[in-house]
Length: 448
Image (cartoon, rainbow, N blue to C red; front, side, top):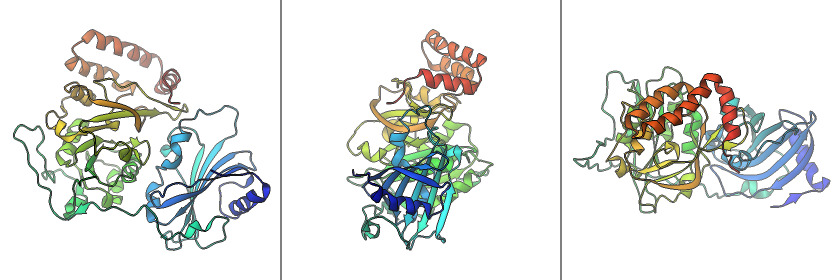
């Protein structure tokens, strides 16, 4: 990696940045780094710049060349930087930091204007490292200081197509808990249904690319559903079938689902009993050799997670680490995995394991924990697989008491369960959710 230090080398970059529409006037470039990444989803990196604005704020700027409309499906989940930045602890006393990602778009890219500047809403931020994040799209041709690789004709990200117009053969074992179907039985209160399967298109496992089923369960999740969808469809591993089970949302959730319908294999919107009833519906539709539940608000840690797990080789279910992030405290934490308490976001379960046991919908808050208690130990890895927002059902204080009573129903050691929940209930009584979250993140083990 080459670092430019002379003023002569840096000046063209500063002139370039100050001649385009940026949120702030830049005064100085502290560092310019060339980064030659592998071709990503429609783009490759040209340079990373650290700049100082006239208001003494730091701007981290990524310059990328883009040739595919797929970059617009990365607007909310931009993975190329979060693995390093999110793991850093914010240093007190440094100026405010901002992030700008500049896409230099090939002339045929459909942006319909020479420049387009978009600010990412703070609700999509992962952690609290940057004060603002922007995306700037620039349409070629224009004068720029970058290398001729902008016009490279061939790239590595050509889409591998795993869609076929022939129907998979389904064989349901008589003793299986799951009755696999291609489409769920129609119900009078169904509000919508769609996806590639509705058009007669299906995915199949191949010799080197087993089909992986990703299921998202959502209800009134317009705030984060798009970010979760983008996290799934941007995975570098392409033989993924994506299933979304919506519980009959009354907000704009279904509108976001329809926006990405070409990338979704099957989705429905209809009322269900609870989250675990919806997850069972997803299982009924899953045809993959492995199944993962990436529910609304959860995302994969980066875009190469599924590929890096080498799921074409394991013969057993595997679970990695799930991290939590806070909007009040910087850094990431994780709760140590236990044999019977696994995060569904980072678990890839062999589908034939689900044929033995499925979620019991009588449990509203801890049906996944109850299900794992019926299995023998599942293989685990220290690899980080997913990130979750703190404050969901598993971490929110308002669900502590009902979760405790549900644990009493299936945990053998009632006293141990009581001793585990009582301190949390006392803390919840004394402190509001924000203070609890701050203390929790201060005390728990950080990822370094």
